Length: 304
Image 1 (cartoon, rainbow, N blue to C red):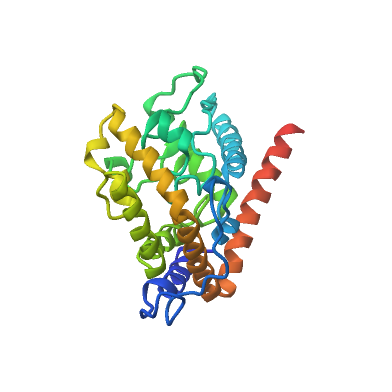
Image 2 (cartoon, rainbow, N blue to C red; image 1 turned 135 degrees about the vertical axis):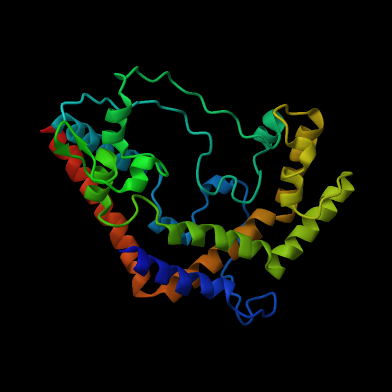
């Protein structure tokens, strides 16, 4: 799928939400009906309709591994030894939805307030140093550099270098002319649906119930966003007050089922957008399948 087609998909699908007229709070004109509203205690277990078109962590590992294998082979053509850094880190967020609706884990609230725990890392191996020229072979000229502005074909020891260097060649092998991984249109739908849902009257009613619960506990916030974005909690240090507010936030979310309502409306907007996309949405699924199939082919070939 080329950039023009993706742009058309974005206009059609995002307008299904952002360009509609307002109706009543229970699925009137322009607002999708909610089929069911679950009671949510662990948002990390939730799944949204858009996830079918997104790459999860394990799929990203496959894409990155294949891209690195292709880049290594490409660099070898130029007589350059390249070993990609193999830094690994433990997952901090368990799923896309764990913090999509704010903090909802009482254990994390007690331990670190609204702060996300730092990832634990293992030391990466020390790859051979690449010269500035060799780095250009790997990734192409730096954006905005004189070399990039000149648009002259890059060569290394008399051999032409692919556009975007070996990494660019690897990306095209896996993704053709499109983006590697989630395209922009999928990212836009992902952000637009949750923001649209946060302004929906059904979610705003849940926010008011949550705010009343927080007020009973001595906190003055109109919605969960205001609590988590409190400037008093923006530093690197987690204060006891932040932990107390975060604990009460989680308690009030559970008491008023804010996450359940927000998720249900969010999912309904995603379904509305995807339905409006028609056949173009199916091509997004095919695009993801094709990239993973290409990546698996590269990985299998490297094992032979």
